Length: 513
Ligand SMILES: [Mn+2]
Image (cartoon, rainbow, N blue to C red):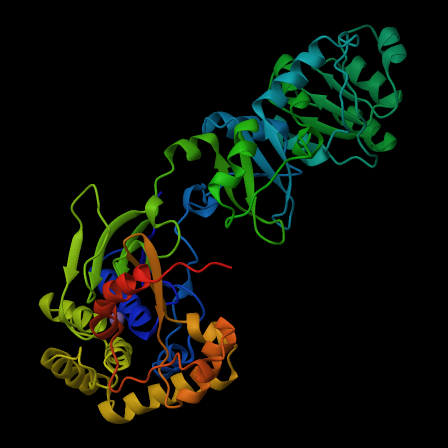
């Protein structure tokens, strides 16, 4: 099974993160990469939605974490058997694929049960120790379709009556046969006409003639008169009887109370159940079969593969990053704490946006940027550089933005203003906490954790109100707010002060309660 590769930005992905993830995924796909999926973390921000809609592209789906899920390791090309198919077919499938079990599905693909090798073996040992071993007593009504199929039979005459449960071999004198017969019996004979006639006259519902023997007109007429079915098979009697006992439907044989799991279940959560059972059918919300998960799949499970874009710190990455296989990092932030056991693609440049670096990749690889990808990347550059005005914006960002705008057919300034109009329009309607944590990054200074949330707004009053509400402190009256002109970069303008703030706080007498 090919493992999917995810490209994802930081938690609560912003425009640059989502744009970079999308455009890098497209680049890998254009280079022949299969199973490359761009993803985002957190809610779809209005400006991201706006930019993707403008270029008629579905925004990347949410990937809430990188822990292994059932869908990552399950077998999706599931071999299953239908409820009405025969036990013979189930056994053949089990053998052919060396499976220990098979899911049983109905006409709607819904899982009805599971057939295991143990079930089959158990059923046969029961049959052999049965007290009725002079005949072969059956355990479920015989099914016309399955009887014909397992015998590879030629139906010489359709019957008028339902098949019963018993199979009787007419290997005795007519008098004995008469006593042994019960109405509804399926009778297996060779070419002995007297036995065939006795069976039909005394209630046989179906006659199976073995060894390809000819059936006379007289017998067929008798069968028609009694509404009995006549099947001819080239199998010998011994084999025919064995096959008939395997004609019982999967439904009659399967285990009905089987645990199931879903593609989105975490592997760790279903591990105990899987170890108890050999395999679990994987079903969708309508209980339709979408995969099969076996213990072997669990042993072969390999971590999710991921590229991080627009961040490189553990605390900013989606949950489960420690379990994932990191393939690369493309970023424009300071290099922090992620270490790997193997070499990875590592591209960190001091430019205004990750989108700038991704656009550069296309140029380096000589792959023409599709106009819609250029538009998405332009959204990323303009969003991160405050329309090319932030102190983090470099001449390269400006040059790339101009090139992207030309490709996408956009005007840099106008498009930028539209993005920010959308981005700030919802500030007043958002709950305070959501507002402050939407773009929240953690920093660790000597084991103390700090987080800085950023909000782009043209209205500081909204923000002051939100901060006061979240912290429960009336900021205005205590003079706890500070207005710093031209503050646009968390990393460049605020984070360098954190150690000094930390020191100052450490020096304070500790007040508790
Ligand atoms: Mn960025």
